[in-house]
Structure formats: structure tokens, C-alpha cells
Image (tube, rainbow, N blue to C red; front, side, top):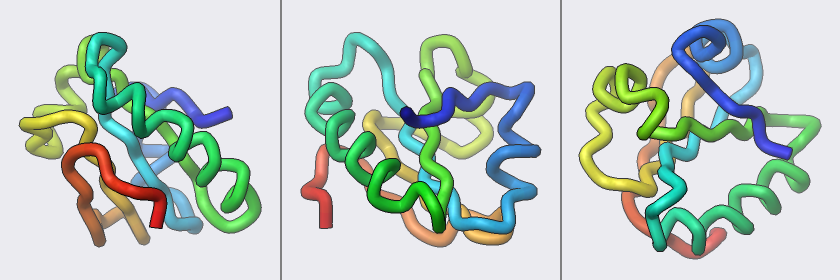
Length: 95
């Protein structure tokens, strides 16, 4: 199961992680987010030993969404050593 990320745990789980971190910014009402959700879960299982996979609910964690300039959802950010190294906006295939 993916880790729920909040303003309280984001720095520790994502920014201080020694592993790469995939962060899915999503909302319950978002249709494309629902399409991406199973892929995010697959990635969490597939990379459970080598990476962290987490989700940020933009409705309850608006400050985090604003901090990273999230304007559309789903948006997936990949962090490495506390820095954003890649970004995918919208529903995209697994690869």
C-alpha cells in the first residue's frame, strides 16, 4: 500500500529519504487520478525494496500541492536526494 504523505511527514519521508521517492498528487473526485491509481499501486509493489511510493491528497494537503506548484492532477513527481528530478502531469502509461 502506498504511503499517505502529509505536511507533517513529507520532509522525513520524501526530502530526507536515501531512496528515490515517487509522489502522486491526486484527489478523490479526479477521474484521471482513479485511472492512474492501480498503476501507482503496481509500482509500489514492484519497487518496494528500492524506492518509496506515496500519495498526496490535494484536497487535504493544499499547502504541499502549492509548495510544489501543482496546477493539474494527477501530477507525479519523482524525488531523488530531496530534489524533484522528474515530473509527469496527467494520466500516463506505466512505462
